[in-house]
Each structure stands twice: as C-alpha cells, then as structure tokens.
Image (tube, rainbow, N blue to C red; front, side, top):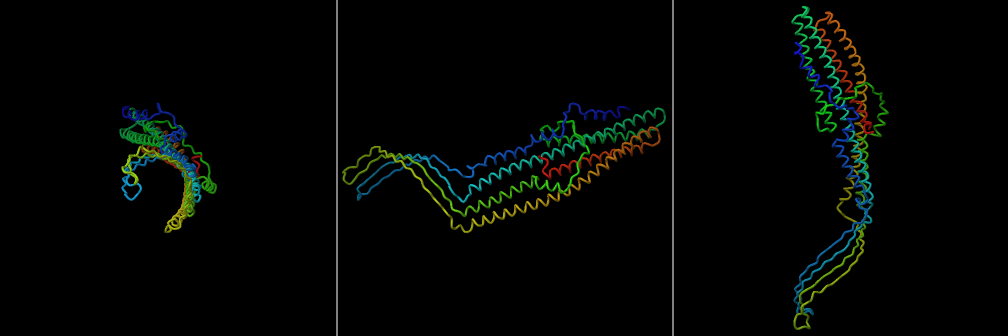
Length: 444
C-alpha cells in the first residue's frame, strides 16, 4: 500500500529547495532595476534631454560655414554697333569662402528655449523615477505573491503528510481488525484530494516564480529561488494628513505635471517672442578665381583675335546687418499665443484633476490598509485556533473519539484559515506598497 502515496512523496522532493539560490526582496529589486528595459529606455531619453540642454542647441551662438561655388558659363555675342562686335568665350571660375550668420536678437527666444531644454531635462529625470517606481512596485507584488504561494505550498504539504499518516494508521488498525474497508477508503480519498491540491499548488507556485523572474527581467523564467524574506505582520500606523503632505511634496506623477505646466508657460513666452523684431548679422570672405578662353573682335580690328587663358582674381569681404519686424500675418501669431495660453490652462486643470484623484486614491488606500490590518489580526488568531483544533482532532481521531469525516472537516478548516491569513497578509503588503508609492517613497 505504500506505493499508493509514493508519487506525491516524489513531488515533495522535486519541489524542494535543493540547488536553489537564496533571493531576498532587496536582491530581487536590485536585479530588476538592472534589467528593466523601461528604465533603460527612460535613462536613454534622459541622456538625450541632457545632451540637448545646451546654449548652442538653443541658438545662442553663430553658425560658420565653409563655402565653395563653381561658376561656369558660355557667351556668344554678335553686336556690329558696339565696340565689341563679336565675342565667343568660355568662362570657368571657383569661389571658396567663409560665411557666418548670427542672430543677435529674436525677442529673447533663445533664452526661453534654453529654459525649455532645462525643464525637459528635469522631466526626463522624473520619467526615470516613475519607471523605477513602477518596476519596484511590480517586483514587490511579484515577490510577495511567490512568497504567499510558497507558504501555501508548505501548508498543503503539511496537510498531505498528515493525510499520509492517517492512511498508514488506518492500515495498521485494519490489520488488528479495528478499521473497516470503508475507513481505509475514506482516508485514501482524503489523501488523494490533498495530493491533487499539492500538485495544483506546486504549479501555482512555479507560475508565481516565473512571474517574479519576468518582473526582474531574468531571461530564464524557470530559474528557481529560495525566498528568504517572510510575510511578517510588522506594519506602521499612518495618518491621513501626514500622507497628504508627503504626497503633495513627493508624488512623482504630480511632480511631472508641475514640470509640464512650466513647459506650457515657457512655450507661451516663446510664442510671444514672435511679436518682437529679429536682428541678424551676416559676414563672410570670398576669393573668386575665374579663367576665360575663346575669341573676340573689336570695331577697330579687321579680324577677330583669340583670347589667351586669362585669369581674374577677386577677394571680397562683407559684414551686413538685417532687421525684420512682421507687421501682418493675418493673426497667426496671436492665435498661436492664445493656443499656448490655453495649453497652460489645460496643464493647470490636469494638476487639479490629478490632485483630486490622488487624494481619493490615498483615502481609499489608507482605509483599505487599516481594514486589512484588522483582517490579518483576525485571520492570525483563526489560524492559531485551527492549528490547535487540528492537533486535538489528531489525538481524538487516534483515540477513536471522532470519525474520519469530522477529522477531515477540521483539516479543511485549517487549510482555509491558512489561505485566508496568507491572502490577508499579501493584500496588506500590496496596499502598503501602494501607499508608499503614492507619497513618492518607493524611489527614495
């Protein structure tokens, strides 16, 4: 009859911790922060914003270009009334040069653009914080979910061992004529049900481990771990006003919205700069070299004469100022300014709306948190009672004071109580993580 429970024993061994590496929550978070692609993308975008945060990008400095132009032409002239009656020439020229352009005033647009680049750089840093925050929150949830499934697997394993002992005990009683075939079948039925529960729970635990590996960015999703942290009931009390103040000062979503409002205000200034004149300086040097070949005839000559390869050289320098002031564009600039001010208003409304939603989330999350604290206390007492009841039932069953049906009912009650406590602890940890995320504490 021992072969009856041989397969579940193998399952117990196969899901053990042999060869598994130990993994704490802090190690899981560290691994996830190193591997997460969203964080890497946000960091790369922040690098772009930091690289763009430069006066040159804003347009403060002049641009200098080397130029090179070729000038080629063919001329066939016939004019008997002119001193130069005929001319048949080919001209070839090359003009190298240096040219500089500098906008010295455009309504302070350069200064506002530089401020925009600085604010966009800060926004990139805020995006990194949000990516890190989301990654940490996801890892915490995945880790505690795996921990819950691991501890639930231990509970099912404990009950499975008790069911196996009952089968052996009933078989021993049958040898002495104290148990019937019906009693044996009942204990075997309970053992098979517990074996089924163990197999299902083992699969649930492996799924949780794969999800944990995914949240950490580990390519080998089936990498096993021995989770070293525990689901302990060690949570502080929070006051709603303190949480609100911290949320207003540190919530990363809210901080990004403040930055977006700054960008909207700067965009309005940039659009208003179009109402002011623009002054530019343009300077340069050119050196023109031209060669002419062909023939030509003047009025005082009988025959045309051939031109030798004649070279002409010209050096030119220039420094010019230009100013422009648009006086009419059918109201396009005014419309752009109005639209920019409307974007400012939208940004402010977005902040107000986000504050309202965050306050609502904070109140609901804190209320849920306090409720779940009480649930953990109640379910912890429930598990203690169920375990003690199971111990007493085991003694009474062996003493013949209760039947297998009553004993099985107590076993199931112990399993359910353990599941309720683990679920309450998991929900409490998740809710606490959400509270910390709302006040911007995960990144710190």
